[in-house]
Length: 308
Image 1 (cartoon, one colour):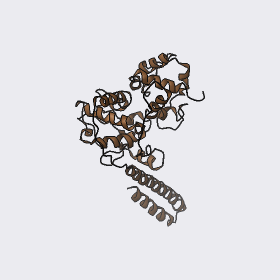
Image 2 (image 1 turned 90 degrees about the vertical axis):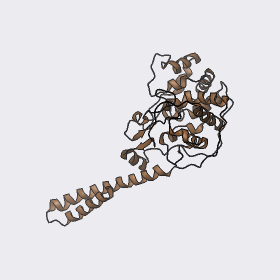
Image 3 (image 1 turned 120 degrees about the horizontal axis):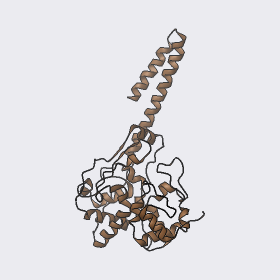
Image 4 (image 1 turned 90 degrees about the horizontal axis):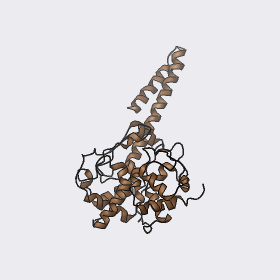
């Protein structure tokens, strides 16, 4: 449609140039030509955006998860402190929340999927779920936009399998969510074409391992790697930068002035040691569901950040 409109405007500019009236010849031709250029530019952005929307791909994964009791327990721990931030609105992992409403611009609708047997995931293979978590691509090859924006792909192979085992153990609950769940608006597609929206984290086929679990800075760094702290708080955790897609988070060096129990209380109550209430965009509730040992690891990592 835009290409057709651009053609009509270009034709109008040519016709206006043939007019004997100077105001029509120059004014009309100039306005029509300008409008034609704008229409062509928007057409180009939308074309590039649609190409990018279809371009993401990742190899299939051949995998069967054992689903042991230990895997399910570990998967629940990760799910409660990470996955539930998007996929739990009422009942556990039943989805339904439109994450697009949390974005300041109307770039699209992104509905978190129901991960119980009610949802489409129950018909996916274990390898399909692994690929969706690691690389943000569904079994039909569609780009899972929000999944690819998160750091879920940095979960270790074993922890990803544990999440799959936990998902498989869930009882049916909630309602079906729309499929596909992600829909970019015209504005979103144009911004994608213009490079104003990211195309997701790089696709990875590498094995991912985690350090030994324990209250150490090393394990805390691993927890931070897949939690989306850096999306808001910046790559060095020294505060978000204007223009980023996620909300602007403060400098996390502030934690160096807190005692461990104050850090735990902040993550579990949403109120910091100075009495400041954390905003709803800060996922303190799921993070607060972490085990004490994991929160200790986070605290050790944050209080050993370089600089101030």
